[in-house]
Image 1 (cartoon, rainbow, N blue to C red):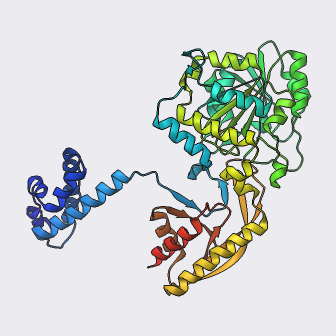
Image 2: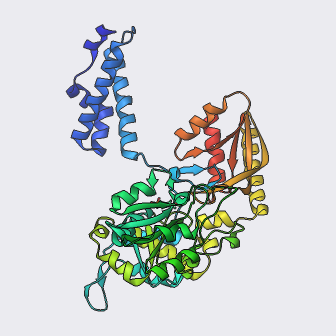
Image 3: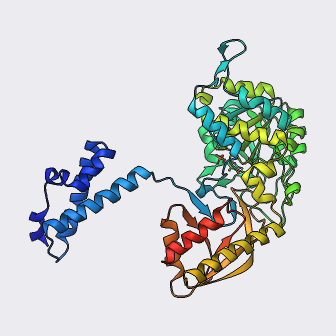
Length: 466
Ligand SMILES: *Cc1c(COP(=O)(O)O)cnc(C)c1O
């Protein structure tokens, strides 16, 4: 009611209210004043559009609670923990790989104190930040040299710019990929200053197509792993070994964008065959790039391994300075790589652990979760039924696009509340919960639940229903 507008208290009056005084003990005065003003504006706009009369005391109450809400949401941060019940192990929207405990401890140490990021402690001189991961990457991949940049998109950009700026790069049409979040090979190629020379067709490319396209302007043969889709049926792609042989004959380097870089045999996890980084290096690829936070299970990073002369040229490129990684990335990556070197990634890296869980383990976890949910439902008279179901999980992160990981989960059928209402409430909690939907039932896959999250999930579902 427009008449109520005159009942809005002044900022000064509000600041003397004990409820607002209390905030001044925890927050800077000018910050509180700014939010008081914003809250007043909100309430003024609301009053203009309502028929309801409001007293000064009522308006003051509204402002106090509005201010409290604003302060809480702004200072708790918008990035928050999420419980992933989707069964998609590498979910780009959910921050990809959760880090290993050792990576977090190391990151905490290196972030808390000064460190030797760019200091050679033996010589007491300036050193390189890349040494902390280069030796590990060389051992793990058997490549001559390595470099790390901000992400794999940056790695591809740097590789193309260093090896083929102003020159032609030959790529198969079947590999002109787009990865989620708008990473497009043709666009990256343009940005790098390299000239894209497409060969073959969407479904078939032969070595002779590359051979015929080579001329004096050619600088590089490029292969991208089509990691997020699969062309099925009548297809032909050139083997990396054949491409390498052609490169050797014509004195041209071969670069592979591997995307999700596996460092060990995926067959060990019961996954289908996918090229590992070592296999690409062994096949003779001169440069291989991959992500740090996909199947590797580390922090966001773009890892480049390959021949020393090319890696050295990249290190000297000014772009590397713009794309360089910080101490937090380097420490988390170093600790993650050490887990591979030590030899038990399936025990210590959350992503690999999730991928290597047996069906029996998954079934047992689903049974435990179902028991907890049922116990909670009977204690608090919550209206839902729970059943254990087999589910199709996914690797995600652009890897294994058509591959379904057989898993287990629980299906929850809510009796007197709409599924969307519960799902929306679960997303609003902290931690938020993201689930799947199976017709009119909520589906929660246990593969992507981390330690202790089954109990947490059970209590969050209860809170959403009470
Ligand atoms: C994921 C992916 C990229 C992009 O990697 P980011 O680390 O997300 O920048 C590039 N190429 C391929 C083949 C990929 O799978």
